[in-house]
Image (cartoon, rainbow, N blue to C red):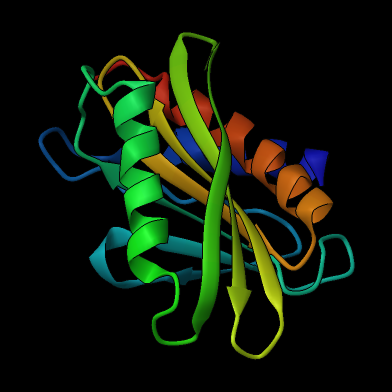
Length: 171
């Protein structure tokens, strides 16, 4: 998967290089073993489609408003509020967040929090939600799967590619 992720980075770099001045930059990662799907509101989803990733895994990212003043406390409070609001509604039996943390990778600030959702069908989803804040752009990154360790592995693989993108300074 590492080689495939590196190949995806090349595709991203080419996408940026070919964007006309003033045009909306389109960011697309080509990642082996994952099926890409565009969602509404500019969310790009990757669903595991091979044996090299874990069945049921989904990773998504989206450009976000560039809020350099965002703090870890703001990020954590937002996600705690979402969990509280959604617990016990619809198909969500319970939702919990934990492990808020901040780190800086290659000049990009990364806020992340772990979420566990118990569904009414007695399944559980493990997620990592993150906000990447680079010099000129920001992204959200979400990794979901039925197992905690899969979620972490998928998240870390996609995180490196998005850090490279978020760290690219505008023209």
